Length: 559
Image (cartoon, rainbow, N blue to C red; front, side):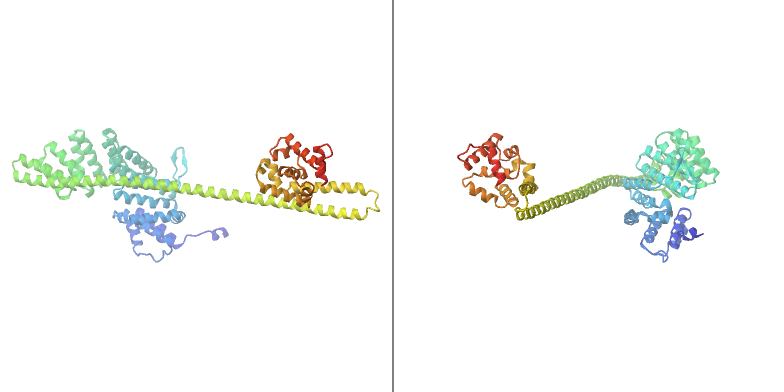
């Protein structure tokens, strides 16, 4: 009971919208009445208002009202619902997300823009959730799955209708067969009859009369069983047309007679055109004249043109020149209008195809631009992360180096303090010499570490050739050595006033305790060349003694 009490309950607005949606499918007049006050007082909030606009379009379409003026509205609704994808499922259930695309397809189909219409129909199919399929078949478990199946059937029917008007009969046939599958699945008798009739019509245009008659007869039997007179008469007329095209005018006459008893206004042109052709071949001229007069009175422009043309020929045979002339003149006027309409329709179709191609290219360009932007953003983030990592690493290294230098400086100061204490106690301490030697060694080790831990010496150790012809580096080397051994350069200059630049470099590197091989590499000399420099310096220091490179090394160590 607690869980039930805490559960979410539908609001009054949600219940009203769901009711309007359901009524629009079965009783659009009632849905129209509920939508009459605009805006509906109980439907406050942006999302409710947008859903209400969508249901207005759906209801008008169900009532066979023109919906082409909703073009901008439906595009705005699609944009809104794409940015708020949870609105339609929460208010209208699983069939909700497909509705904006479905009616966008309907609107663009009425506008003659078949490519756009087909694109929106396909997008409607794409956003619809798939029901669990069992053994390759859909499984209708509840009212929700039934509505989904019905919506899929409706979409496939619309796709087939659009393809049919583009003269793509095989593709239209495939879509209509899919629509028949879904209408059969939910046992929607009226939809089954319509789809059977449409499939028969596609086979007729594909010149497969046997298949066409098979589906027409199935539709006829279901229409008769369900006592749907309009559909029975409509299908009868279509069967008569198939037999007429096959040259079997007796059977054609048998099926056309029932369809003439109660003709639906939408089928007047088709029915009377077929009937007139059948009566003409059977020689029933009175009935032919009646059909032509009905076409002139009620038929569309194609039917009226056909009637005037045939009446013109009949009048010529009967010798009625004036009547023949009048009918022929009317025929020419209507025929010119038909040609203009056909040309306009062809141009419109070409424009629609061209505009759709532009739309596709623009969409592709935007998609590529968005993809590129996404990659650039990711690359930028990656570069920033790498730079941040490098910055942190450099800071960590600098901090570690600073700590090491501070530690070496501390040890150096401790050694200085020990050395001072040792000097004070040397008179009373018999082990003074040994302790002094140990302190000197430790002091040299600490000073050497301080020198080699410096930035400039790290650079030299990594790239020994970097100091060639770079006086700034040598100035830093001299500064670091003098910090570790105060006054070293001054004492060296005092003892060797005529020392050359390279000899000074060797002396500084020796004081830093670098190996002879590394020193030779840094000053760009061979090891023999480096040894000769030390030997030459030894001779300058001790002119009376035999020059020795090792003797100069000892001198630098003691300086």
